[in-house]
Every structure is written in structure tokens, then in C-alpha cells.
Image (cartoon, rainbow, N blue to C red; front, side, top):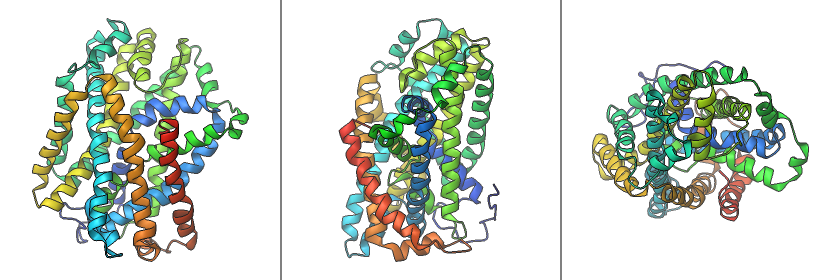
Length: 450
């Protein structure tokens, strides 16, 4: 799998903030955005819950589709418009003489990115607190449920929550594209390496076989159940960070010589590998100690501490785990912040560093009041069930229908030896966009599918 490393320094930067130095840096940044909590605390559970290996069939189908025509569209409009969310939607709708309407609509996905960032910062604060407790050993000194209740109480984790926001802002203030690229070139390989170590260690636990059976023995009858396909679709859609915002800003930092569909495929592949690694590292360990599997925060902050407490060298592996989760989370948070900062910077003509500080202050200011687990849960449900999928749907519709195929086709074909074929248009307009509608509607019906 060879990724082009052509130096972009000799090519005019596509954005005032500069551009990614090569496609490797771009792909790692996109993987950093895509790989997040959903890969770690939801995918392994859904894989086992909805048919084991049978679940992988619809999941791979949707990952391939959404990765190719969904991610590619968001990258392409960002590069075409030369800016992020607000400017890209305005660019699309100007083609219909309604640029102002596009600008106003763009605030929906942009606020979706900010909303996720606010909730994500709270959760990452929990991760940082658990990491510190793993290092000191205090994570195992109390009952795991009591530890989680303490860190997820109202105003119960202000120092770690603040530290997360400050870290993300410092990394972005150091330079938008340079900071993003450098951070992801370090943190993403480290994430994969740490999870490989965990997966190998878990393989040798007595009783781990039950976990592998939970994950991979196919239950083919599940393919006949609509819920399996709905959950696979939702998991794939949200796992790739298709929000109608975040990936657009990364596309605006991409040089014209880069092959967007190829980069999208690589992003989807590495995101899927991350999800599979999470499953291999978590579920066999859970079953090895006879603990009931779970999903969401209880898996990370209640179930897994019980696993680590019973495992030889559990302290060390708990540290590895929470470091890797922190790496995945901070790279995703950086993307959410940057989507907001770039749009505000471009729209209001303010320095990037000032907008980063403002974004961080807003995220922390709101986040402090939803540190309670129930409140942040309700917040994230609202954002991820209503705002984000609707924003992603707006993005898909704006690109494939408002801007139109002829122009987006030019951008998708730039940097390729052969232009993308008409099959891409068919998948984008007549398969991907209708599925984005279904993701939005079914998310409401099911109370969340991603």
C-alpha cells in the first residue's frame, strides 16, 4: 500500500493556513479524525451483538460505500472551495444564486462539530483522569462503578477536562496544518502500536476464546434482521466522521495533485483496522474474566478496570489502554475544533490563534455545566441523533445536487491518472444521498444508530 509522498511545498498552498505536506500526512490526519470513541466502545459490542462475523458483511459494504463517495465528496468540496464549512456550502449554493442560504445552512453542521467537541471534551477528561488513576494505581483502589460515578458527577472533573481543551488548543495554535499533521504522524501510529500490544497480550489470557467466539462466529440468521443492517449502516457512517463539516476543512488543506478517492479509501481501511483492533483487545479480555460485555462509557470506565485489576501487570496495560484512547480522542477533537476555527477565521477575518482560543473557551465554558454523566449523555444524544446526521445530509445534498456532478467530478478527478467514472455519480447521487436520509430518519426512530 504505497502512499504518494510528493512534496507540496513547491505548489501554491490551497489555503491561508497552508496545506498538508504529503498524502501520508493527510491520510493520517483523516484517520485521526475518524478513529474515536465509537471504534473503541461501540464497534466491538455491536459486532458481537448483531451476528459476529455476519455483521461484518453489511458493515464492510457500508464502509466501502460511505468511505468512497461520502468522504471523497467532503474532501473534494473543501479543496474546490479552498475553505471549510461556511465557505464550502456558500460556494455550492452560489451555483443556484443562493449563496446566502448556503452560508446560513452551513451553520447547522458547523454547530454540530462544536457540539460534539463540547461533549467529547468532557469524555476525554474522564479518559485523562482514568489514565492518571491507572498510573498511580488508584483506579483499582475503589470499586470501578464508584470511580466512574466520581469522575462523571457535576463539576467533578474540572482539572482534567480543562487540560484536554488546553492541550487541543495548544496543538492547533502552534500552526493549523503543521500542528495537525505532526500530531497525527505521532499519535496515530502510536495508537495502532499500543492496541496491537494489548491485543497480543489478551490473546494469551485463559478463557479469551469465548471473546473471539462472541466476535467472530457468524450467526447468519442476523443478516435476515433489519436491525443488523441498520446498525451496520449507522456504525459505518459515524465511524468515518462524516459530519458535513470536519472532513471538509481537511480537504481545503489538500493539494490539487492528491488523489482524493484513493485517500478516502485508505482512510476507510485504517479506520476499520482500528475498530477491529479494538475488538481484539477488549472483548476477549472481558470474556476471559467472565464479565458481562457492555458498550459506551460503562465498557471503558467500569468493565475494563475490572478486567485490568484481575490481569497480571494490569496496571501497565491499563496505562497502555487509556493512553491509546486519549490519542484517538485528541486527534478527533482537534478536527472538530479546526472545523469551527477555520470557518470563524475565514468568515470574521481574525487570526487563527484567536479563533482557537475562542473555540476552546466556548467548548470549556459550556462543557463545565454538562460534566454530569446524564447531562453529557443527553447532550451527545441530541447532537449525534439530530444535528450531526442532518448536517451530513445537508452536505451530501449540497455537493451532489446543488453544486452538481459536473463540477464535483472535476475535483474528484484532479490528481488522478484517470477521471472517476459515471458509476461514481450513480453511487453518490442515487445511493449515498438517499442512505444519508435514512441514517437521519432511522437515527431518530431508533434513538441513535451510531
